[in-house]
Length: 108
Image 1 (cartoon, rainbow, N blue to C red):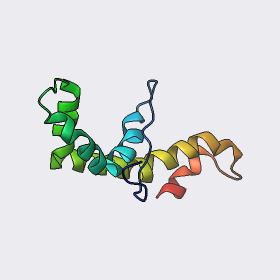
Image 2 (cartoon, one colour):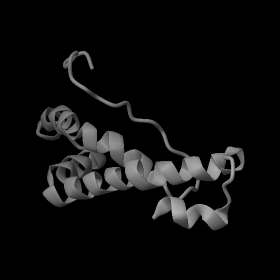
Image 3 (cartoon, rainbow, N blue to C red):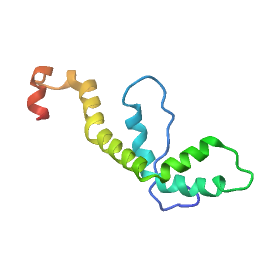
Image 4 (spheres, rainbow, N blue to C red):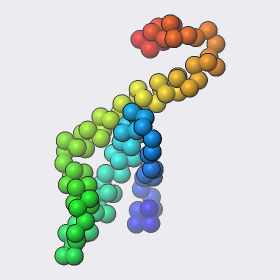
């Protein structure tokens, strides 16, 4: 943040637990920050004293177009499908004249 004060960046958060949608939660900040992650890792990965295998892996995968495309697709799934369904699952009891049986009409 200090190096790019006007840039739009999302903070990374630690995701714990066993929910199946955690990968999708992580994809939004990963996709938004991909260029900053690459710029931050580049001097570290190519330094002479570098020996961190995890940094190597993250740098190589974030530079691969297939991986960036996967992050973009997962971010779209998170924002367009997973989060609205999560909201619906948590707030369904508060909605008026709604039941799981009428959900098909609302979704389609």
